[in-house]
Amino acid sequence: MKIGDLPAPVTASKGDWLPGTTWLGFTPTDGDLDSRNKCQSTIQRQFGDGYVIEYITETFQKPNLGFERDPQYIADREAHRERAGRLLAVHKLRTTSRDLETILGPDEYMKLQDMWAQDGKRFRWSVAFPIVQSFRIKDDRKAKEILGPEAYARLYAHSSATLRPLTDAERELISELAIEPVETKNAWIGIEDEFLMAERSQITPAVERAINQDLAALEGIEEHRLARVKRRAAWIADSFVRERRRAGSLTCDECEFDPRKVAEEFGVNARSFLDVHHKNPLDEGVRYTTIADFALLCPTCHRVEHVRLRMAKRVAST
Image (tube, rainbow, N blue to C red; front, side, top):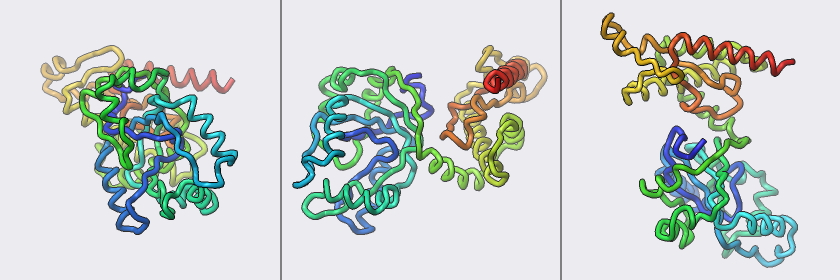
């Protein structure tokens, strides 16, 4: 998989000393609610509906006095040396932030501020966006080599308290980078946010029926939550189908069957010859799924896919 295969573009970049595993934090201009809201709005506007690519800075800041020998600081500094100057990961962030103290707990948050707060401003990184989906970048080259000196300088020559939006040219430079998904502990936050969005949305009945069939094998989920998981999956599938319609790409993703000629001959909708299919049904409710988890298949290919899924499940259980 490559960055260019993601279901949404990489819209911005974040420079960090260490990789974000569960959240990306930003420091508002002040500790009051208005400043935090303004910071959140700025970051939201910068990443929009896209992904954020994470860069590990060349430098690592010294902690406040008294923490130079702190074991966590020493471990973090050593970890930084291995990754410095590299593009490390691509993240999907939750649309809205959470207070960092809520995420970390009061004790860990206080220690973080003791170690890193500057000029008595104990709200460093306090606007935190949970990471709901993450991909590790497999290319180990330095960012400057990948981006070239001009793009690298624009994005990373100077530190920024917010994100750095990417240009189309910069997106093209990273589009071929190989990535692999990594486990994301906060996936559930993004999933539950979208439960509400799905419940408020109109979904094409045929799509909802198809996805309910695909998810029939889901087990071990409480009944009320299962209904919400299925509803969210159908909502995403419906968005996927609508996007394919807009793109004029109503063909089978497996055999490339194009139903338009047959549809014209019989005066029916070309879409009626294709089924929407969930490629990873057992991931629902566990992993943050997107439109990339769905496919359009002709009925024959759809049946073949379900046979494959049943066989894979049988093999896994033996």
